[in-house]
Amino acid sequence: MIKYLLCMLLLGCSSTIFPKYKCIFNQVSLKPEHLACMKNDIRTKNLVNNLGGVKKSLEECSKCGGPYPDARKFYENMGLAFLSVAVSDNGFGGYTFYGVFEGDPNLYKIWAYDVGEGEYHVRAITPQSKIKEDLGKDKEIEDFWIKF
Image 1 (cartoon, rainbow, N blue to C red):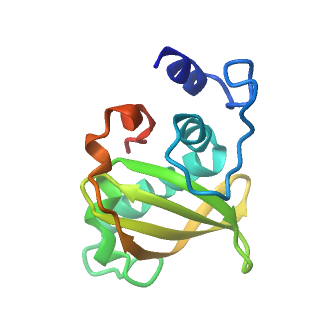
Image 2 (cartoon, one colour; image 1 turned 180 degrees about the vertical axis):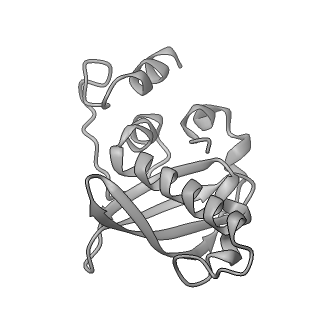
Image 3 (tube, one colour; image 1 turned 30 degrees about the vertical axis):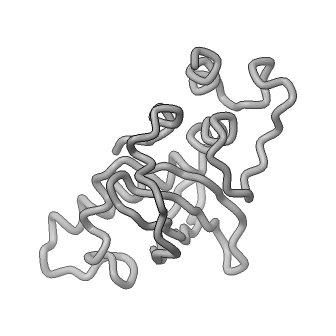
C-alpha cells in the first residue's frame, strides 16, 4: 500500500515505483497502478474541477438548466467522490472519461471538451451500465477516489 501512496504523490506512475507499469489510459482497469495513473492525470483533475464548477453554477441559479443536457439530473452525483477508470480522445474533440461516483451503482461515460489552457467543460454525462459491487467499500482502491 505504501508504494501506491507514494505513486499518488508523484506526477505519474511510470516512475521507479512501478518500473514495469506503463499507463494505458484508454483501458478500463481497477488495478492500483492504473488507478494511481488515472487519479494523477491532469485531465482527470480538470474534469473533477469542472464538475465542481457545474454544481456551484446550478446552486446559484435554481432555474438554469445547466451547461449540458440533463445537468440537473446528475446534480447530486457532482458532490460525490469520483473514481476515474479510463480516459480516451473523443472524436468530436476533448476527452471521454469512464468513471464511477461513490455510492452510485452506474459506470458513467463523461464527454469533456477541451476549451483551452487545460480547462474542460462537461458536454454530456450518460450512464453506461450497472456495476455488480460497491467499489466504495473496496479497501484496495479507497485511496484512488477523488474528493470534490
